[in-house]
Amino acid sequence: QSALTQPASVSGSPGQSITISCTGTSSDVGGYNLVSWYQQHPGKAPKLMIFEDSKRPSGVSNRFSGSKSGSTASLTVSGLQAEDEADYYCCSYASTSTLIFGGGTKLTVL
Amino acid sequence: QVQLQESGPGLVKPSETLSLTCTVSGYSITSGYYWGWVRQPPGKGLEWIGSIEYSGRTYHNPSLKSRITISVDTSRNQFSLKLSFVTAADTAVYYCARNPHMWNGAQTTLYYLDYWGQGTLVTVSS
Image 1 (cartoon, rainbow over the protein chains, first blue to last red):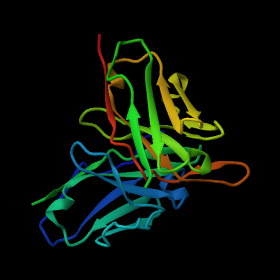
Image 2 (image 1 turned 135 degrees about the horizontal axis):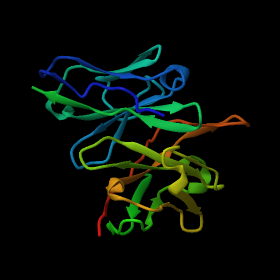
Image 3 (image 1 turned 90 degrees about the horizontal axis):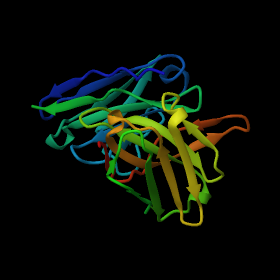
Image 4 (image 1 turned 120 degrees about the horizontal axis):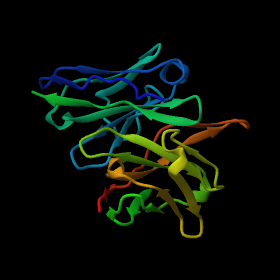
C-alpha cells in the first residue's frame, strides 16, 4: 500500500487560483468516489475541507473545490488568501477496508 | 459539538508499548461511526493507523497491523490504541478522529475523518 502522490509544494499570489493533484490507482482513488482533502496549519490538527471527491463540509469556504479524473483527484483553491497557506493532504479509501494518505503539499501564498 | 481528546504518556522507551486513549464528548460512540487513529512523525505526512467501531470490529494499516491493538470502552465513551515494540520511527503526533463509514452487509467502506482531536506528541527514547 503506497502513499498517494502529491506535489511537494505549490504557490500562488493572493487572488489567484491553484490546483493540487493527488494520484493513486484503480484500487484507491480511481476505484471509489471517496477522496477527502485536509488542511493543516503548523502545530494544528488537520481540518476536513472536501469529502467524497467534491463535497464541502458545512462552514468550509466555497473557494475550495474538489474534482477527479480517473485515478487523479484535484483540490482547487480559488481567490487565494494569506490564511490558505498551509499543508494539504489527500486521502482515499482503498479496497481492503483501509485509508491511505498522500504525502502532503505545502501551499505558499506569495 | 463532537470533541475528541487524546491522552497518554508523552515518552515511551524503545521496545516498550505505546498506549493512548481518546475520550469522545458530545457524541456517543455507540451511535454509529468508526473511530480512528492517525499519526504524523515530526516534519512528515499523515499516516492512518486504524479504525474501530463500538462493536469492536477493527481495521488496521497493513504496515503496522502486527503491532497494533485498538479497543473500545463504551462505558467511558473512549477508544484506545496500543502499539507494541516501538522504535524511534514511531515518534509522532498521534491524532484520534471520527471516521464515517458504510456497511453493505459484506464489507466496511471507510469514508473520511471529520472531527479530530488536537493530537498528542509521543516520543520514543531511552
